[in-house]
Amino acid sequence: MINFQERYDLLRGEAEDFLGGLFSTGAPYGRLQEAMNYSLLAGGKRVRPVLAMAVCEALDGDRRLALPLGCALELVHTYSLIHDDLPCMDDDDLRRGRPTCHKVYGETMAVLAGDALQGEAFRVIASAGGLTGEQRSDAVLALARACGADGMVAGQVLDMDKLAGDEASARQLCALKTGALLRAAAALGAIAAGASAMERAQAEAFASHVGLAFQVRDDMLDVTADQAELGKPVGSDRAEGKRTFVDLLGLGGCGALVAEETRLAKEAVSAFRHSGFLLALADSLADRRK
Image 1 (spheres, rainbow, N blue to C red):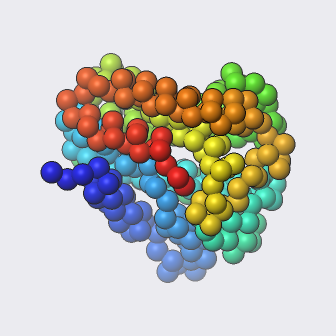
Image 2: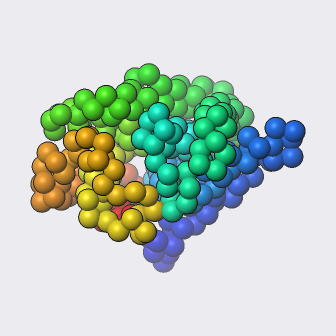
Image 3: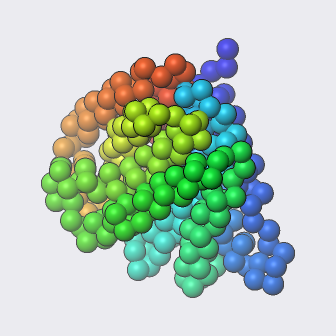
């Protein structure tokens, strides 16, 4: 029987192959695609496409139908990282162990690369094969809600304005900035599987709890991790005056919250016929070291 890590690597590899074939640099404006690929193909966990495919399979669907939908989310996620690193945002020089996009291609090209990745995400969904028109329409709406003014971008506003002053507001920030795209990944997997409204809601609940656990663990790593292992600056949130879950709860409280949210995530999908990989995924994200 294939183990969790082998399965994860298989799904991540399929996402990498899909993403690697999207953008050619042969046009006169090929430097734009170079900048897009520089950040898009820099590695990473590919949690969002993996989650979309895993949810689809857990609901008896064909993961190949969920692959482009999940990869569209990865385009949006990458655009958000490019913009997040800009001097006008977090002003970070390092991402995934190497210079950030604007450090290599300049600020203007980095902004344009992010803009293009967001637009391309919708093209990928709109042209995805094997889905009905209704499924593609539902998928486009799910992505728009996740990355728009009431989703990921709203979370970035709360983050930049340092409005997470207590646990409730920190949870809200997380639900928007981190959780929105993870919930969209679960929703897209359910859409590709032709799941019921109840199944989709259960999958999204899983992603919501996983998203909070993921962010709390991220805040813990910002305090405890080694920069070389993490691949990005540590301690940057505190240096910028942002209050994290560690500030609010302490490391012990954060550990307890990660455990509880992971338990709730697993409970949400326990009724799925093929939930094994999702259960292991929740544990893996809770225990991650980078």
